[in-house]
Image (cartoon, rainbow, N blue to C red; front, side, top):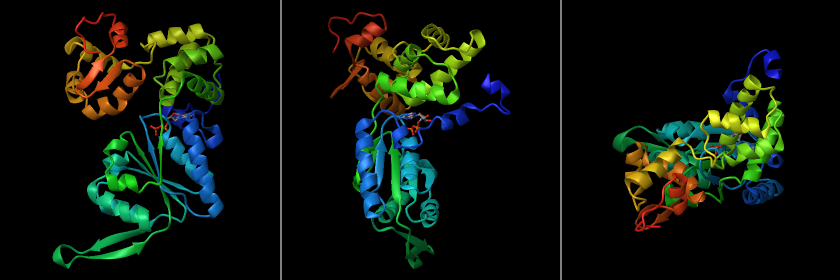
Length: 334
Ligand code: ADP
């Protein structure tokens, strides 16, 4: 009822922003990353300098952007936000770098997609806090070195393997974010429900958590859909039965598999007899980019024990066949 009496109703995007953890204590899950990061930040604070550049890697929706915001908040500095694809021209990056204030955090999302000239400019900026601004064209061109304020680069990538060696080497700390455990997602859901004023029971939280594909962004999205159902079709209280009924309406898989996960599994088992098959062939079969299949879909299916990576390609496990209600042929490669 709070949403109805409010002057305006928040959009999903605004709601997502309101659910971001604000500081390290607020951040649920990823205990290893938190401990490591706490040390990196505390060490820099003690010495009164800027921390080393930080690379955050892992699938989408696991909290990389939230973590970058937290790093800036913990350091008491500002966050400047951009992305690899937005830095097509080195000049765009030069402008950003020269506007930095000492101690700022520069966040570059999808840093593996940065264009070559910008990447090369970044090397010098990361190492020596300098940029070379090229003036003029052709043989008469000269480069003028320009000092920039000491800053901390936080790069995020869904594909750390796609980073060039020289770029990777310039990060002093790499945090690998992994899919969340159901218990962690349940705590995230209960926290989100508290912020949104949704009456979410413990068991209902566990139900949504187990279907959230190990991903906080998906957990929060499912919570909003379940809340719709509870408010429209019931009294607003989210019980386990209400959660189950709502998730059934939205075709949410009991294991958290999404449409693409199911398409990939279906193709692997039905079209390729369970494999082995290459990732690019699988991607063509489901009409997706190979990078999406490899970076978004495959990590979760491997984690869920549905597919295995072998030197000859991807192979469906017995669990994958069972998931599709099929029995593997005796000669299936497993
Ligand atoms: P990424 O940058 O990795 O794609 P985001 O940082 O944008 O992920 O996170 C997506 C959403 O998931 C955020 O809006 C936030 O609400 C939620 N979220 C992510 N990680 C956590 C966490 N550890 N605790 C609580 N909420 C989280």
